[in-house]
Length: 358
Ligand SMILES: Nc1ncnc2c1ncn2[C@@H]1O[C@H](COP(=O)(O)OP(=O)(O)OP(=O)(O)O)[C@@H](O)[C@H]1O
Ligand SMILES: [Mg+2]
Image (cartoon, rainbow, N blue to C red; front, side):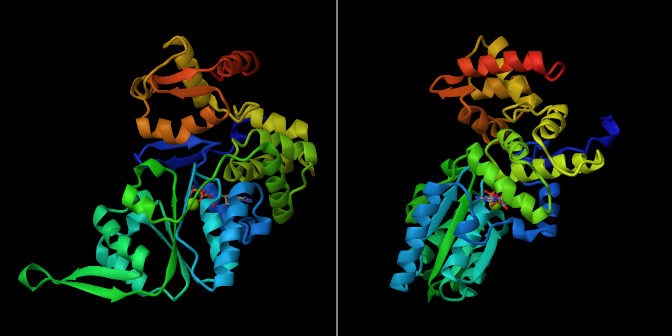
């Protein structure tokens, strides 16, 4: 396989403004946006098509059913968890299942209380208002949100200086669905106003395999059960990555003049791109190796580890670490990060299997 044939990796920018080039990055990249724009039906529209996350889905189904029976608005919902697990998708499904109008915005887009007032007063009764990256709302905007969420009232200061006066306006009833990858950054008063709080977990490979087969059907991609399983194993528990890898492997499959993705082909394509059997890339293995070699297996503080890697702390915490912890390669303790026996075994095996990737 020639280097020229290798597609470029996904490039994303983290909140800290870091640009990361990764094929298995879980944040949304241009490649994912193009794929979604070309095939919007990839994103499930109802609970039945939303595969995996059984626990979260069952809870939400009950809340939706109860709200519909009571003819009341659904309580406010916060969805949290790592990127690419389906928070935005679930927010849209909630609106769809409630048969409610859906409005979508992002925390950083609501700059001033007046922006929020404009959004809230424009809602139709019963709407679902989805605020992505809700941890990035400013405190001034957040304060206006409190009474809006609690009493469906808008408390706002109109005018400036001596002419300024407080105004209270009734709002249509609505459901706020907030999404965040960083729950710890949400203030307690805001968090307390969400009656429904659900955490999305990484998907197991059975669920990812089902998601891959559904995506393959929609995209007209032929993939064997073993081929789908091989991709699922390397998709870091994340549907967004699974879909991206499926598309990648398919591009190679077509390039090789083959008609179906099988296990051998998936293994060859993904291995060639430095993605190992657990979905780890070079940087992930580097993190494990640094903890092993430079810090004798840990514990090592997050700041020291970030400095050694020449990465910023937020990137390490948000982008790389959650999956390494989830797979049991890295442990987070009160004194810092530690390499587990499983993590050590993995880098030793990878060093033998993937020469030049450490
Ligand atoms: N349970 C699921 N079943 C099938 N496809 C899914 C599922 N969850 C997510 N997807 C697919 O994965 C992609 C990413 O999902 P989504 O955009 O909802 O993630 P997110 O959690 O909002 O990510 P971010 O934190 O980056 O905003 C979507 O294209 C969607 O089609
Ligand atoms: Mg999202």
